[in-house]
Image (cartoon, rainbow over all chains, first blue to last red; front, top):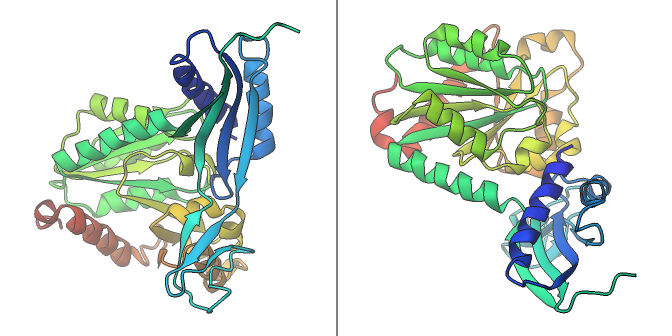
Length: 120
Length: 225
């Protein structure tokens, strides 16, 4: 629902980072999206494409790194992917586990080429 | 060439939220962010909550909607400063809106800031408003599986309020199952069932709010009714 806003925030951040590399061509931006981030991947890709179309950034590729919900057991330190919100540790059965991944909404990296690409 | 960025997508919102958090701390403001689907009873909850406060209590309300100032008009009757945030289509409140409207309202601490977010279980959960706690409402006319359908907000909320419990005799809703589902997502989520119509459960809710205020501002809370 708010993926256009999220896509705009990604582009703002990309522009700020790209400004540190004048003359370089932006190739891609990688975002890390957690299962609990409330972001719909398809909607975000659609929004990103829509707001970059016919702009300087229309060739910028959005790479999505999807992060499933992962918990870590506080008793035995086992780290596991949570299936169907079963939060108990699959190794020792402890209910004391904490979330270590799955809420991300981060920009991991951008890819640039120092020399501007020839237009194809 | 790959340039590592490692920043939150909502860096700008998070920066403003951090400023708000600092302001709440400096001014001794306790801020709660109330979130639910449209029609779960956020405004009714606030009406009865405001009605229970002594007029001397320092409280302000920011209420968000896509359109109309209907909620603010309902809430202003209780004598506390209220400001409507009309988002004009945006499906959530963000930190910039809170900053601007808090300034325009001219509210300063110590006190309690109640934020009624736009009715939506999805987008508001992504936007930090610098609050001390998110509170999620689920009414008994919805499904018990809502926590499973919208896990993000239940994961991030400190308290789940089950609302409209006066309707329980008329609907097929199992509160235990709703709580079980919420605790699947967030085992430590606190829980209070209440009715804003009859007032059932309100003692517990007001006690919870006072305890939270006491936790974050022990001096200001000592004088609360």
